[in-house]
Image (tube, rainbow, N blue to C red; front, side):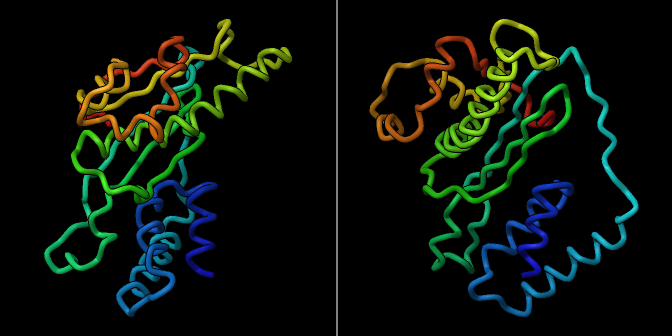
Length: 208
């Protein structure tokens, strides 16, 4: 119940506890004293920072943007080598409109990535599922003459990714032997890239 409340806060108003809350949620079926202490630590943090918040200043010159990253097998340790979940990578992304975050997530990937490039591509594919839904919503609002900030004929999203190999796979539609297993599950957004509705750009890891 406590982790559920934290998940609600994380999704609604406290993106700063996303990572910690998701880590605790992984062990809800078999919690230990260590996990209990972690939940208490999050609650103490919320109590100490209850009078603080994020000040959002919309920038009308910016439209829809998404920053996405992945941590390849970041949970793997020698002591947890018998735990299959420790081999999973983590996806993290934030979607912004007019420079303000509207959707954010940090969660383990359902597939085991075999390389950093594959982990980044899984993260990109996951983030773009949310992006495409937001694009369709904004496009519908635009057609109904709703006063949204982006008034261009098409709603275009800039996506920032820090792995150049991942960008190469996403923008170059040639199927390669080492990446052919990605074709069916993860290439769902390619038509948006071809039609220039989604523009994938490189960004330095330090600026993520």
